[in-house]
Amino acid sequence: MSTNQTFINDNFLLENKYAEELYHNYSKNQPIIDYHNHLNPQFIAEDKIFDNSTQVWINGDHYKWRAMRTLGINEQFVTGNGSDKDKFLNWGKTVPYTMRNPLYHWTHLELARYFDIYDLLNEKSAEKIYIETSEKINSAAYSTQNLLRKVNAELVCTTEDPIDNLEHHQKIAQNPFGTKVSTAFRPDKAILISNEGYNGYLDTLGEVSGIAIHTYSDLCSALKNRIEFFAQNGCKLSDHGLDQIYFEEFTEAEVSIIFKKKRENRIITPEEALKFQSSILLFLSETYHEKGWVQQFHLGALRNNNARMHRILGPDTGWDSIGDYPQAQKLSSFLNALDSKDKLTKTIIYNLNPADNEVMATMIGNFNDGSVRGKVQFGSGWWFLDQKDGMTKQLNALSNMGLISCFVGMLTDSRSFLSFPRHEYFRRILCNLLGDEIKRGELPNDMEWIGKLVQDISYNNAKEYFKF
Image 1 (cartoon, rainbow, N blue to C red):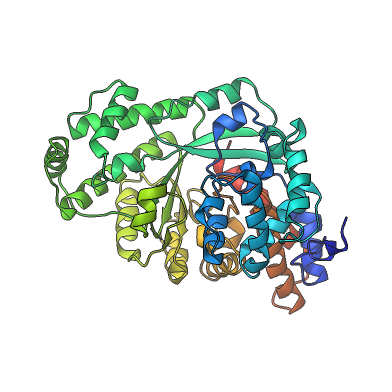
Image 2 (cartoon, rainbow, N blue to C red):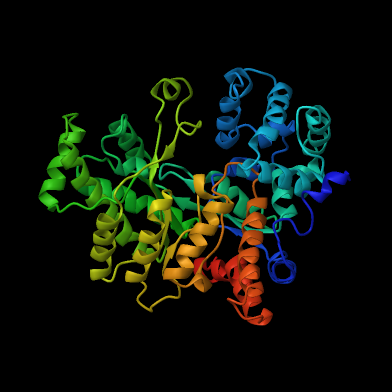
């Protein structure tokens, strides 16, 4: 090991003895429940072995891509036809410039935890590290299933569209390997009626469900059919990635007419789209309640801002940012409509705009009705906020206005099999936050109780909440 181990060391981010005790004795060895990510289930089913570290570590990672572009790296060495080695070398060149961005911490945690490498990654060390990491990654010990075993992942939950046949999840279920792999149902393409290609998507949904979709009622039947199929394959969660929750007053007759217009390729107005989206989202949420699922809402992203690069590279390639949508009123009305019928299932709300943290932290309290511990959750800092400052602000808002003791903790929301040290990162930040308050006398030096709280947030709450 290099002398640079002084950077990523046993007490990284832990600033006093109380934080150290909380992390090492209560949090560090808890299993990981990663209840929301975008891992490729085919790679897990096939126990894929990657050819080199670029394929598992850089490809698909729009966090890294944005940093490289900002530094002036040509797209050839980001997502283009540059060699895997050249892409890694350009990433190595970028890393020193990412200081104070979470990428710097994540990168060195990942090198340490997966590869036992404590050297700092930079332009000088990049080739040596590329060779060493690629030799390891291209071996059976670093197959996808072994990478999950290596981090003590008890559960990972990927995210699939209703049209997915779940063949890879079925294969995994038939060949268990120690980590449970489940799926989350993400039907946004059936909701966003104004999207290009919407009718073509419904045609495919109809084929998959065996229900020809001519009417709004047909669409509901097809979605219910796919929810049942997902449930039969072990699904217990849904997920939605929306700019904001939709809630407009509507009638069934109105929605049926709007849907008919769309199927006839006629233009629908923005107001009509909102009425339709409100109706189908309420229908889905009531169906989740019937199934006893957990529903997740990721709110606040402003996507595909760069039209030129979106045309060239497509979505999810690094051209998204934080939006400033109004959230409170529609979210309140939506949750209230479900609660009024006693059809509000367990719900997690993730916020992307830090200006809305207190809005979300107080909103969940309106619908925690005592029926389930932590029924409505303010989800962990995600995407642009899954860094030290963002996590701390989310933890503080939740603590100040709710019960952090009921929080279900961290997830990766990642496409990378090397991203699981984000759980460690979160746990260290949590323990340091509590340890600092013990040191300052704002919390009692009651390690047994606060240690239990840390264990619960790290693992126990999620295990109880999701009931896998």
